[in-house]
Image 1 (tube, rainbow, N blue to C red):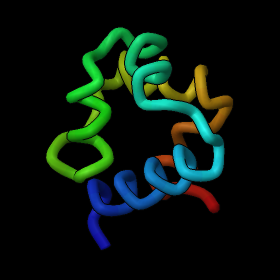
Image 2: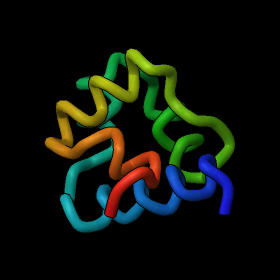
Image 3: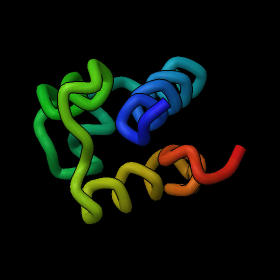
Image 4: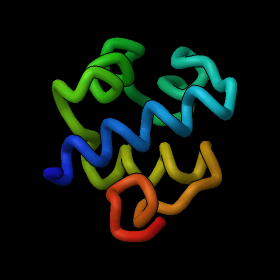
Length: 70
């Protein structure tokens, strides 16, 4: 499994269980709702700055989202 697929899988999992709306996450990460949708669909991945903001908002490690730890 490649890193983009792992990110997409874990990103979707975290969003599903957190109950956080895409709109709220988009605002916190300073990106559009479409960007969040693209991340969920595996069409793109966030920049390092955006990944940092996503992890901070979701209170999750980047290592987990990137598949570096379980």
